[in-house]
Amino acid sequence: MDGPWTNINMKLVDTSNKHGMPISPVLPEHIKNYLIDIDGTIGEDIPNEEPERMAIAEAYPDAISTINNWFEAGHQICFFTARTEAHRQVTETWLVEKGFRYHSLLMGKPRGGNYHWIDNHVVRATRYTSKFTDLVKKNAEIEVFDD
Image (cartoon, rainbow, N blue to C red; front, side, top):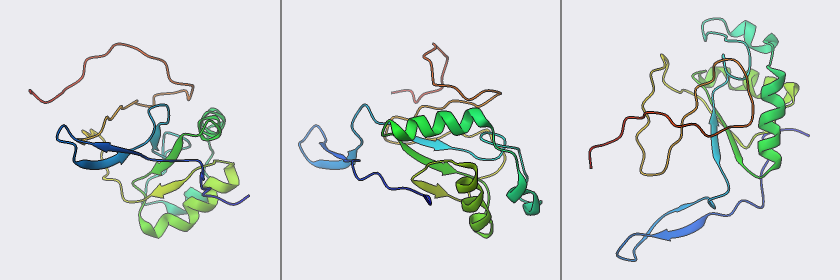
């Protein structure tokens, strides 16, 4: 099977604001929209300046199985990478060859880390450090807007 795969069962839920006006639809509450980095997160950390290494990079087996389990559970899988559009073909081929199941691939994420995502939808961030597993709940300090 070639990727990316579509999920024909994915339905957005219509929503409205406090005045009853339609606003952007959302996924059902039990479905997550995973945005997952590639280099250093699901496989070897390869800089954009060495694209010849991208095709032969090792993938992390625990990442393949965990992500594919999320996919099978109906969650949306989007790889979001700082690789450029020039790296799209090698990246798509690598993802398929390694067995990752996914729905979409976004190229051109800003480089350098220290991300602070601001959005009108709920955003949860998990920093990858060494092991891909199912997610667990922990209390943590976060920065938020002063409402």
